[in-house]
Length: 516
Image 1 (tube, one colour):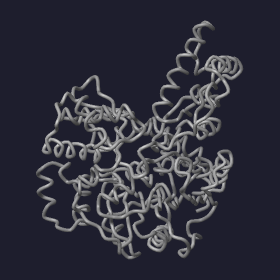
Image 2: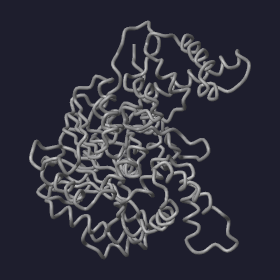
Image 3: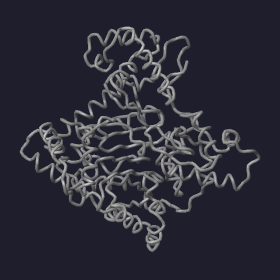
Image 4: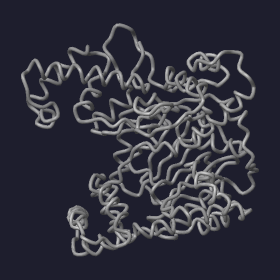
């Protein structure tokens, strides 16, 4: 593991919020299938391979009653995470520099265990210990999240990995290997007069990798180990450790109807869930899974109760798509088609209160008004609404929550001061983290100029003072100057003021501004 660890320190695995791992999301999926998960807001959370804590620290910050433990093999990244914890003054989280193999099987239980980007990249002994930890220390009703590369879909990536590993074989350092890999990516993009089968996939992957972050390219394609496995093998190994398959964090993959009527009919012959999942992987050529496990003695049901699901508070960051009628778009540009006027009205009502959540019961009258629907509403119409909202939930456009209707945002502060970003946002901005976590465990990607502005939003400076500060800093810092661009000083000042105004609106929209 020495060479792998050296590469891991030279090119750290980028650490940022992964929405699918948040205990609130895991708990909602557990409830969907009859599990009684522990409260996410007071949970004991373990993350294996937590890097610098970019996923775990926001959980601890926004859910202050949780107790969070991160385990990380890289001393450098564990120390970076520990420093951020000190800067934030958090007492409910610890990041340990520790080998996963040294984490004992006996000890207090955890309600949620997360292992993202670890399983396929470690030796089999570590894989088995991860499963053993989940089997031994997962609390009743608890949920383990494990991501891994799967067969057969990963065979395509293995083809490209073989090419890259051959090309970088004589380069000793991680940085040299990365540079050489990018050279090969450019070579592989050479146009061919007669392209062979599979060339379309290769060119698509090359387009993605040319813009991918260094950490993804290195750790996905150049690591010493990357071993995909069949889902059925993973499930069987989990079963030997007292675990059972719960679901996938990507819920839409659980419903064979998304593959079309012919595939749904063909898969219906498998009356066993695990077999159905495996053969659906064959049809999809699925390369990656984010699997959820629970204890084998936990009782589950596969009958979904929509009434119970939609009794929970809901939130959604969806706005109408100006280019497509009856469609909404999220912050990542994903489009969701909504047929019912009542459903469109409900999404509009949620958009008005985001990032807070609201129940269907509380917002139904407002949804009818915004959707142009006359009240009283018929029961059948409400039933169809729940079906459409369930489709949005499965596809990731709508999220129920078990934590609270109110988003756990920044603390209030005295009135009359300047604008203030949350303490978490300011600390991460000062550390140069370009992906800022929101209270809903999503990320805002900011440029260097916006990050500097966030670091200055401490409540003690007016927007005009912050603009002057940026102007002065740009005169002596080339990075800021390039981000600001050239032009007359007055034009630059207006640009700074406009960018600051847009940034404040963005932070406010996502619950990252302290309220006076």
